[in-house]
Amino acid sequence: MEHNINVNLKIWRQRSPKEPGAFKNYRVENVSTGSSFLEMLDMLNQQLVEKGEEPVVFDSDCREGICGMCSLYINGHPHGPVQGITTCQLHMRKFNNEDTITIEPWRSAAFPVIRDLMVNRNAFDQIQQAGGYVSFNCGGAPDANNLPISKEVADIAMDSATCIGCGACVAACKNGSAMLFVK
Image (cartoon, rainbow, N blue to C red; front, top):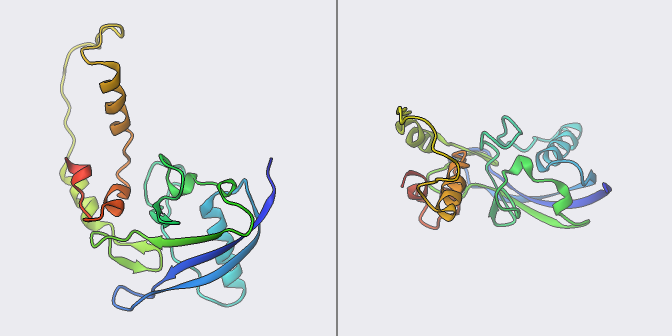
């Protein structure tokens, strides 16, 4: 059942890559628990614009969980507290009334801050593009009951195949390494 909550936001603000940033506090009231996290940020930006203040800069593209552009660190976790989803798939029902939510850009040298919550993804995108595309004719599909690998290995392979190349693994790595992705 949807209802409305009030949230306190602690958001990283940084005007440019060369200027130091800092956290700034905001409050958003009457947020529907059925709205997405990005919709809540849209609400905040609408409030800021109405007050004549600069909106918070953040990246989003598809808002369907397939592009990976909504790269935010929310309460210390890439994409937020729910594993296996992107920020745009995170809904406000995962938060409680009067929660304080800390929102930061990816924290890795591989993703330098452009402004506020937007990061430069060029280096990571180049790694992905260098992988290229390969196609092989391997014959027909094997009989489903005659898998040459175990179910456990097939499940792990499927989990790996769900990677959308968002960079959360790099942002979460204490060494800021893309090794998890390019391995």
